[in-house]
Image 1 (cartoon, rainbow, N blue to C red):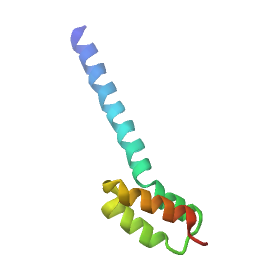
Image 2: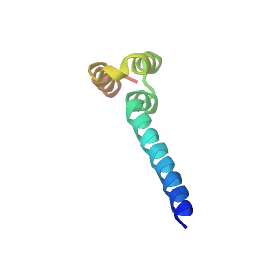
Image 3: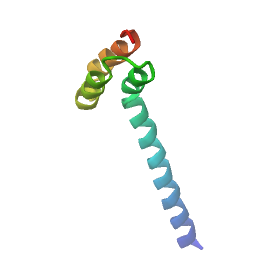
Image 4: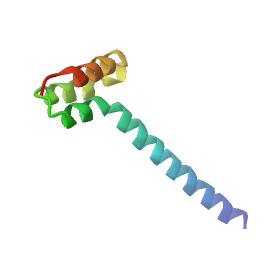
Length: 72
């Protein structure tokens, strides 16, 4: 019985890790998604900058503002 519970716990931990990863990935790429949704002419540049340097938080904020303010 304990082995079944440990297997279920392991599966639940894996599922939780997967969902946390997806949510983090969504937040990380949010500026790119906003630029694409707004059909910005700078979507490619925002995506590239966000993908490569978005982990620096400062660049992520710059990309987010850029995505929200660029013309269509």
